[in-house]
Length: 253
Image (cartoon, rainbow, N blue to C red; front, side):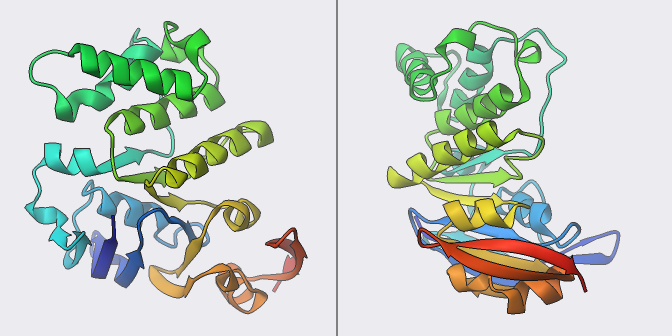
């Protein structure tokens, strides 16, 4: 499913955050949205899910403007994984994932809905925590659960806002391997991510933001010192490891 972003602009309290951002993402790609803090990464992800509404421009999914979709129809196409999410309520992992079926429900969950949730739990290998309360599981497990909830929507597109934040190395790899597996099944993924080496390893395409503007977009060539240094204000060198670019930070510039 193709996504086309045409010249979107967004401001907070009249302060520009995104300025004339245009992108095209093809079905099955993982697009890594990279850039320093405050560059507009999370804002772009939220605009793509219509959590925020751009003041100008358009976002098309297979040629259809997302503004024309009701919330249920949008949720059937797009799943959203926030940067962090806690639960203060006594709700089980199973019930959190079942919430992802809401766009498909009439007035209660059907056998098909329950089967889809059970299959996702098995796919993500989280059976042992399925009946535990979300507040009692680890951060890495909770992130898997939130991704599982998005997958329960059966979306064509999944948006992930800093999905590896606050996770240890093992859980970072588990989460991104999971995202990669889903794109191999045809889902398109758009991931805002801080770690350029994780982005290099897992993403097919890149959009590098600087102060709300697309500074560079394209394939692995985007993660080149000539782009990284002016955007991040850090001198870097790179090496090739098994066909992937490895970025080595050296010093501020």
